[in-house]
Every structure is written in structure tokens, then in C-alpha cells.
Amino acid sequence: MIIGNWKMNTSREAALALSEALVGLVETHPVSVGVCPPMIWLDLVCQHTADSGLWVGAQDVIGDPYGALTGCVNAQMVLDAGAGFALLGHSERRARFSETTESVLPAVGAMLELGLFAVVCVGENQTERESGQAFAVVESQLAPLLASGLDLSGVVIAYEPVWAIGTGLAAEPADIGVMHRWIREVMGRDETLVLYGGSVTAEMAPEIFALSEVSGALVGGASLHIETFAAIVTAWEQREWN
Ligand code: PGA
Image 1 (cartoon, rainbow, N blue to C red):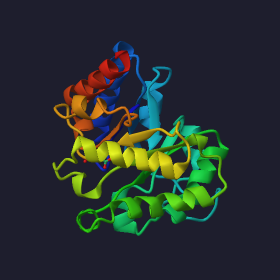
Image 2 (cartoon, helix red, strand yellow; image 1 turned 180 degrees about the vertical axis):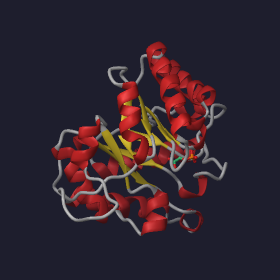
Image 3 (cartoon, protein in one colour; image 1 turned 180 degrees about the horizontal axis):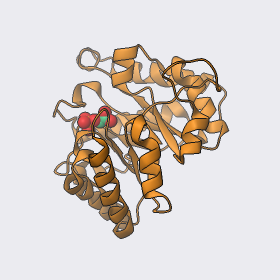
Image 4 (cartoon, helix red, strand yellow; image 1 turned 135 degrees about the horizontal axis):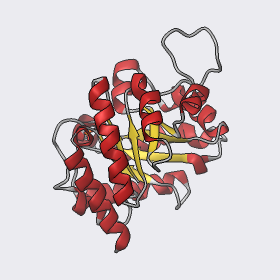
């Protein structure tokens, strides 16, 4: 599966134009493609792409039921809008809002309860990688999921080495493969989908997708340009043929 994460980008017009282009893209590329527009355009994108086969997801969601929580959106609202999944614990939210896997667990649970899927993001920062802590950090980020008692079949993991997000730096394919294997081992489920997300570009996509451990990509910056995103989707489609 290839998911585009627009982050805090796109005007209303740009969101509509990209949605239209994505509808065309999924018509011609029969692979799973998802998009996470900014929350304010979620409903718009859902309406615009309804019945196209495109998965639409929220960039974040809160685990609480309806109630007094100014500025937040819950899983039921995401479902009502027509979205099918949400990103949770993205590194930018971990850094900016001190989110942890533990703090997003209620949101993971709320999504699963409604039959939606949750993409939980994990990944080490540069200092952690350089000091040999990458595997321990990722394991500790996965641990709360395992301890939660939730049915993890609806959980997708996105491995996003923080030092390679939005920086243009890329992890070595061999390192990506080893980490993805580690994630599945920690999860204790061979069938867990593990997406790679760290400055994925059209150029590097074929090399990353050649790794059998990679189940797809979470694409940030490159998803804002339909040609680049289409090239990444095409690279994934070719992998599925092989
Ligand atoms: P990037 O972002 O592709 O711009 O590095 C990936 C992500 O953070 O989801």
C-alpha cells in the first residue's frame, strides 16, 4: 500500500486538484493507494473521491468519544466523513505534541473498534541511530501496542527513521530491510504490514520496493506532486507484478 501524507499542506483548491488526479491514478493503477489530507479537507477529499477505490485517512485522531475537547476530532467523525484509517503517533506529532505510542493507544483502539485501520508510526532519531539504539527505541515504541490487548490485525506500522523525514536523507536499503524484519519479530505477527516512510522519492522507490520486507510506503513531500507520487505508485505496482 502507498499512502500520501500531505501534512499541513494544500489550499482547498490544491486539495481538490490533487484528489481529482488521485482518482485518475487509482483508476489506472490497481494497487492500494491512500491519502491523508489535512483534517480540514478530509470531508472534501472523501466526497470528491467517493467510490474511486482511493483510501482516505486522517493525519491524526483522538480516542475520546464525543465531548468537550476543543479542537479535536474523534474516530467516529473520521468514519462519518467517509475515511477508512488514520495515522497515529507520527514523529512530527511525537516531537511537537509529546505524543507517545501509549498516549495514542486510545485512538488506535477507537479506530479498530469502528472497523477502521490505524497506521502507527515508529522510528528512531539520528542520535539514537548513531548510538546503536535504533532497535531498542523502535521496540519500546511498539511495546505499548503489544501490551494493550488490542487485536493488532487492524494495525499497520510505518517505519519512519526520524532523521530521514523531510530531510532528503535516506536510509540504506539493507538497514530498512533489517528494521522491518525486527518490527515484525517484535510484533510477533509475520503478516503485519510495515510501510517505509523516510523521504521516499520516485528515484529510490524501486530499490526500496525490491525489499521483500517492505509492504509499501508512507510518502510525505513527494505525495504533493502527482507525477512523483504516480511514479512511486507505479514502482509499487511493478513490485506487485514481480
Ligand atoms: P517525507 O515524510 O516523505 O516528506 O520524509 C514522510 C512522513 O513523515 O510521513
